[in-house]
Each structure stands twice: as structure tokens, then as C-alpha cells.
Image (cartoon, rainbow, N blue to C red; front, side, top):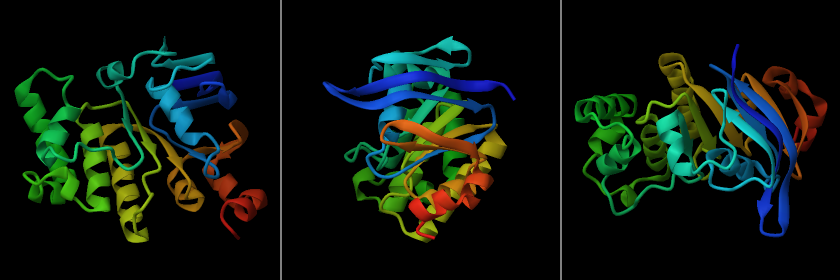
Length: 238
């Protein structure tokens, strides 16, 4: 499979505080790749650097063969890169429908946007029921669904999910992950998943990397990592 995203020797941080230390990874087309690790390991910082929300201090990020290191975040959706931030980060005083339409802002074809909106609401029927409701009134699970649907409005090649399970019930987490699997098959989508719930992430992913104190310490097929005694003891409490 072709590599859709390649990260090489990436270093990044906040001011004088370094967080990522020479992180390298790749994501092939059609894969679900998980980045797992403890809280504070640098997982969200990694996604922020890839998305263009944080400028790396060293290293290179390439997407679809083009160097996107330090590229402005607003250029991502139009180029096929979408991110679902932790907590969804919806606009609470806009309706569900308006939040979704904002996800398709790169598409100037009104008919295409309307068709995509229908597809999003077919994927998450509850959003059709809530389309006129303020996003700030949604439940946690509904907010996460809306955030995923908003990301899909731009028809991304790669969707990055930052801690989608935070604050959700196990049943809702299972439902969100099931929809992600469906989107991978239906949309030929590639997913980079950051997740603190290591067991759930390794169940969903094809491959995974373990990030610890800003560095990749382990990587491989998710099924193998799920059986690894170090992973089971350190991250899964088994």
C-alpha cells in the first residue's frame, strides 16, 4: 500500500518546552493506525503538528507526497486532511446543520454540499433529528458524532481523531468506532487515531505506535501489540 502520510524525525513543543522527540511514523492508504500511550505522552501534540496547528521545530511531514511541514491548518481540509479534535470543538451557538456545513466550506458547489449533508445525516440519523438544535445542547455522544460528520463533509483522504472516547460511555465508544470502521470501507478513508483507551484502539486499528514521553517506543500490527505483555500490563491493566 502507498504511504499517504509520512512523519520523519518530528520535534515539536510549546515555547521552551519540548514535547515530541524525533517522532517517525507512516500511515498507508486505507489503514487505521492508532497512536496510543498515557495521558501527557504527546499524542495530541503530534496531531496538532500534522494538522498545522503547531509548527514543528525539526523534522518533516509529507502528505500525498507533498511536504506539508508547518503548512497553515486551514489548508488541510481542501487538500484531503481533516481532524476531529478532542471533545469535538463544535460551535455551540450554531445549529447542528450549520456546524456540519462549515465542514464543507472548501466545496463551492452548493448541490454537492447539500448531498454531502444528507450523507452525513444518513450515517448519523440522530443528527437529522437535531439539525435545527444548537450544538451546545447536544449530549457528549451526539457532539462526537457531529464532529466526525463535520470532518467527513470535506471528503477527506485522511481523518485524524483525537481521543474520541473521552467522556463517553462504553456503549457510545463502541458505536463511534463502529461508524469509523464503516466509513473506512465505504469512503476508502484512512484514519489516524489518537486514543488513551488502549484496548479499544488496538481492537479497531490495523497498526499502532506507542508514544511515551514524546517518543515512539514500540510499533507494529495492532493484534500483536494487543498480545504484548508490556502493553497489557502498562496500559491495559491486565
